[in-house]
Length: 462
View 1 (cartoon, helix red, strand yellow):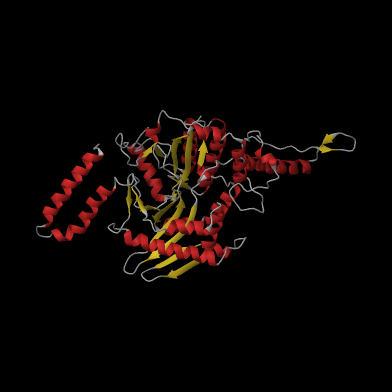
View 2 (view 1 turned 120 degrees about the horizontal axis):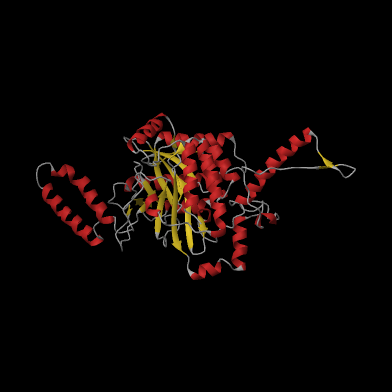
């Protein structure tokens, strides 16, 4: 691979050659396209492999409209506070706001505002990040997706274009997605914060979603991975040594390494099982486990063990019901959630309730046994709920996707959850079985995909 210097020389030479070619017949028609291509190559090295979408960029006009539309959409929420309890109408609500050069539609606005609130995020804070004066960034992805990826200038939120089918899939499953996050507020699933559609005259409508970035803040991250638990097409050439270009690596690049968490490993394994089981029930596949890491500084390792920090982390993880709804919200007086508890095995946990008779003997009737069984199952489910929401979140921005090990800080999240295992994917599975005999590939049934990703995390963590 070329170094940064070699690449700049090559691009400069290409620009000169293009300029000479443009002086010939028909050159003017290609001027804009080629200038963008050359500009893009030059700009790629400016911001760690990301484009800054300034006035010369092809998406500058679009992102300015997105900023204006998002600011107005959030302001509408500020002016009309969401209710404490969501209704069925909130999930179906579509609000259209008309601007000078475009229309912006917001889907299920109160629902996503409720989720933002549960994440401890104020609407003003969200609005400021989405509509600040700084330019959006275009993320250069090695994904096969045709989607466009943008980041807010502070890199806190991702904006991704989606097709109509994917948006409809999300909205049709939004209620159970919200229920899952309510039940497991420390879930690793990507947090969707808004769904919108922008309509510019004489152009196709463009759907896009706003997500919380898993890799935030990213200033000290040293490596990023996109994991699917298979091997076919799961290698990416790393960036040249010494280069600051961001490359998202894949499964085969991670071989020989481990996610070292020690006592937090059981929590991670179980949460991945819970989240992938949810996706399996939706009949989806081809989602990715995003993984990044950065070394903990010595003062961070010592600070994480201090009593003052423990108190702050406890307040962040466990809040009073009357306080702000932050993930992990449980009654603060329930101190048992902070105490170490036995590991929960969902497959084998059983409950047993005995009846103390007046004579001191113990026994139960068939009806009592049935009730005991139900109570035991509910008790096991409650214990698991408590165990998964017991994790003390780090005193750090974006705490839900951050897990500290003894020496490394890990950023972990599950993204791209829109691919349904339908007829086309079944055909693709059959073709890949013939094309890659004896090898693991991404297009498999949801149960197999779920089990395989869980196995990968188990094999690559300690």
